[in-house]
Length: 158
Image (tube, rainbow, N blue to C red; front, top):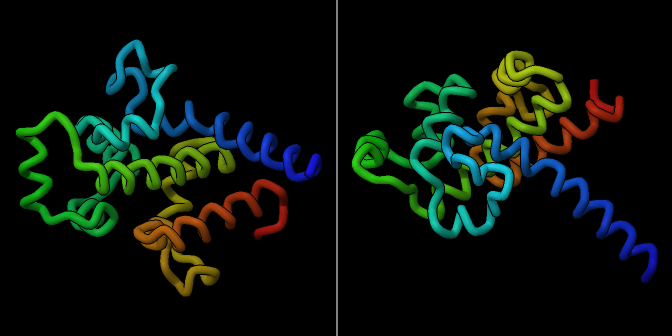
């Protein structure tokens, strides 16, 4: 039991340390204001992220409208309606956080946003020829991309 508790604490600490990077990928202080350092992602997703978080992440990832539609599983008409709203729906917010988490991890591993975005756009044999960015449209794909990044960080993945 003590071993399991230690692993849980280690895992929790690792996830907690990623949160500021995820918040930064979602626009940080420009989107969340002075409370950016105290944002609870669970609460924000349940409320619906600010539309500006989507705009910040789409810009950081240099997404095309087609990529936005596919990754967030929305239509261009839905995205057009967001211009009249302050917050996204819960499901879209959840997908947006998944993308932000992958970008934040890629930036940590590859040491710059430019390298991270370039890597996310390269096709990968490990993903059946798809790019990591294409794979993160689903939760299993995002998990596989995360694992690839963790392997790279620890010198396992080439």
